[in-house]
Length: 627
Image 1 (cartoon, one colour):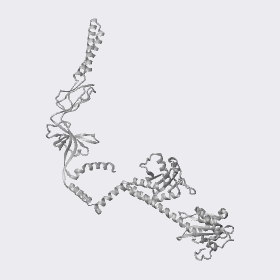
Image 2 (spheres, helix red, strand yellow):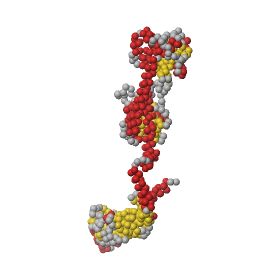
Image 3 (tube, one colour):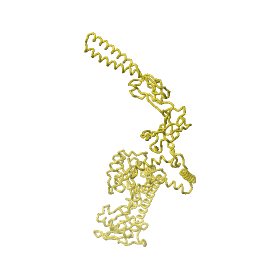
Image 4 (cartoon, helix red, strand yellow):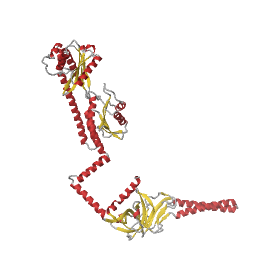
């Protein structure tokens, strides 16, 4: 039954019942201490105004669009029966659906009336009245209720204003977080700015942001922290809590607010116990119906807070902030990737500078580079193989230690010129001299013993002594031979290119140790270590130019005489030994000099000559990895 708002002059004012109820009830209604006290006073005044009112209920709109019971009233502060409550709520739902007053029969001969409080064309509150048959008529009760609903309109407007203010606050907070992210450079900086802004918005002690890497979450930032120790047990438990919320496809509050369906919070409880958190919220970052990450907020202490536990309002705020910032986070994440992000952005920026407006200098530089490439692709030059080289004597020999001993004297060292047979060093011969004296004395004693046995005719002693004398003479001969070789002499005329024993006097040497390396003077050989990538370009008889470190201002021509068939590894590369002879060796040339050799390998275009090392290596790389 629709109720018209016109023709209310015959309805007595609401204050008539209120005055009858007493000044105390009216005073409590005008100055309520809380919303519950206001509603209780309003229902009490309404019961005095409407005769036969035995119960009433108020339903207010929730944020999800549904309605929930906000207050109920029964005479003498009694509780309404479940059947009466069900009848009133049914009448209210019918009133909501029809957008008008509805009436239905309740139990015990009573009537349930549903009345919608409509603001801006939509019902925002529902009032249910339970009337006794002996009271006011339905029309009279409806008019009185309509008269008193002005106060309900005020409540609805105030709730709408509070919701609008809350929504504005959430939008402002989200925009602040969005602005902070936009000002930051790079993904990590943006996430850290988002976490720090959210920390202040929720009055939390820590905010974490985790992004999906494959099919698992990875904690990227923690608020007010420069780095994340992902291997720590606390970060692992935090990741598990965020994964728990992600699998439920919704935000999670721990501990769950009373009166709400409890989600799965086992991982949240375990992490809170480990980290010492009192309360925690986990909310997904959703872009185009796809979860790209999670946001977690924690409170560790109740100090300075009226309520330490997170509420539904806190979750709504975080959800709103996450929903607004998630697309920017996803964009930053894409830009952070190489192929789909930074590389694409760099290529796009380059094309914009080359083909867009402005950037005349960049366009001029690009044109000059293209012109240079074109010129290099046409002009030809000498193709030369560059490799390290060193000068060696045509004949090169070493002087080694003839036996185990100690260095006694150093006469020559590297850089000195020697002649064949000239002493370069001496080994310590004192031990050998003593050994020779010992063996000489032993031999003399054995000879004397042999003579005595001969005089006595003792053939057994004579034979034994003869063998001992032979052994002593052999050992003496060996010792004298070693004494004859204590001088380390030059094997040929030339230059000592390696060996300096002046700092090793008294040091032990083993038989065969190389002490000196002597190169013949006059004729020299250039040894060139050509890379395996270039050796195919070198042919015997090829000419080239040598530049030595000691003669950097003078280039020497040479001719390749031999290419070794085996390679040597060194300096991180494989090289082949190429030998060459100098056309005109200067008199001051010395073995051991090092430099760079360039071997002529024909003609080639400039661009190929410059790019050939890279091209050759790329061919091998592609051949290795391509099927």
